[in-house]
Image 1: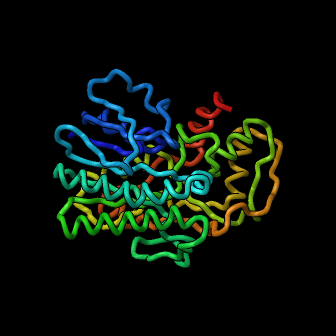
Image 2: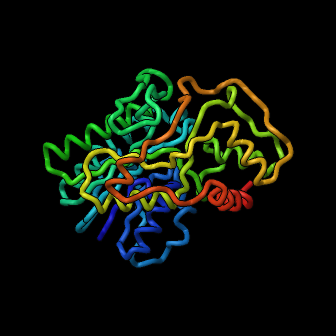
Length: 310
């Protein structure tokens, strides 16, 4: 297939490029580099089956020739990013989704939207099933990301129902691995960077909030399976193993090893979800998918990646 990946220079997008190229597809990666980096794609330079296009998808998207699939992964994805870039975050989820869906419609291409567990907000249901409608504050600081993705899902389903576009929606839960940005503000790079510097790990709040961490290769495998499926409704992809942030900090300190301990500071961001755990029953049933990489094995790979960058 000939496949366009928006956000292709980002953390997940670049790993998707690798996987799809390895399967024999031709890949076009599109990114405006607002949070992505060409360093993530440097190893693909010069390949005949790979093209990088610097472009902002909130502007009209032109691709010459046929396309078999459009994967829309363009968006700031960490709280620091979307708090600093609130309007670009809203635009890429709305106008960017509209433009990429329009391209898929014009090319007769399959379309896959990268949505997020953040559409569930600070959930009142635990674990979160795809049928849960969420508990989102539309005017809080996180609303620019949460509501952009919720709008993108609604737009995707409208194009499927009204225009017959062959769509997919993946709801991505916390994912980690090599090529995460060291300063993106998320818990994995924060903790790993502090541990490698021999500093105490900073836990915001009491650390009782929970997260579920999925290694990037597992996530990409689920995305590729979803792309090849006939499923149009949203599908959760993530690791159902739930840890408190405090437990996770202790794991990082043990693996690195870091003897500086842990410090507690007040919460930084209003509306930070207290619980995050996917129900992956549908992924198991529809895709035959579940994560395979153990947390500590994935963290070892991630720590080695960051070791030369701290």
